[in-house]
Image (cartoon, rainbow, N blue to C red):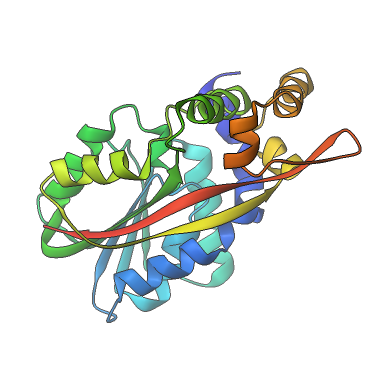
Length: 250
């Protein structure tokens, strides 16, 4: 299945799934501290939950995603909520079609592990964010243990072929600092995932899903520890990963 086809199949699952809430989303609002006047850009918006949470608190939100089906899902989400201060723009993170210094707040939540070029994307964030504006970054972090980090990327890629790479907390911060941002605050949030809904949201066929189930049952001890994999009666029930929430300014 193509990357775009996978996202089209998964768009509705993302609209109704666990991305619509969570401690990391609450921290986005807290770190952004909007006053009602800001123009916000949400990069890799997916079903639009991050932008939706900010929209009532700011002047305008602009949602970008490279997949039309995701933007269509996000647009429906905004219409259902009765929010009209949004624009929906098809764009990849590495080539944002906006002028320099045109946003007060830029967010990207659970999208950067899909970026083709994280460093280039961070440079684009730096370009479009006004001086003194705030960048809020959220994504999964990899364990420091190399074996369990490799395993995490392996099962994420198997479940979702558009996955690129999960970085450690230290490496995510380094990408952001290399774009001349200063990290102001950060927090790592534990996120528990019910296994089957997580697997289904990947949008892959049953054969591929079964391969993912098998790999979880065969997980190395380091990954069982770091991902807190729970198995009962021969079936994977859940696992827990870690989300970095970070606020930075230039």
